[in-house]
Image (cartoon, rainbow, N blue to C red; front, side):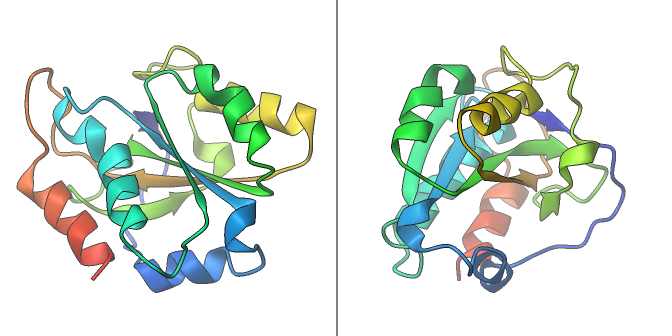
Length: 164
């Protein structure tokens, strides 16, 4: 789970996602789902990618399910040849549960406490050290990330509506 210091609760939709990535061919985009589905809404990144897989609009984009260890997928991400990498994860940014929004890179907690072994900022820095890529962070506000729980209805419904 990402932690972001941002208070805006502006929701986004699929068309806004597509527009933000319009400069890239679908095959030049890699979506990286992060999180742990055994921790309730922390599985939102994987669920988001599963819904994305069903769309035709971004067909050909690379979908990588990285779980809680994105560092284990660095070479796979680089091997896609993607010019844009979109990390999708549950993120706390003080919005209603299920809110989906872009998170500014400078607001991501680089040091920190998260469910990932390495901070996502460190992962992004490494990827950029290998070749220039544009990194995006798509956060989904969780209701709960308690161990052994299922995804909340708010988060599941929000992701479903995002793609409808």
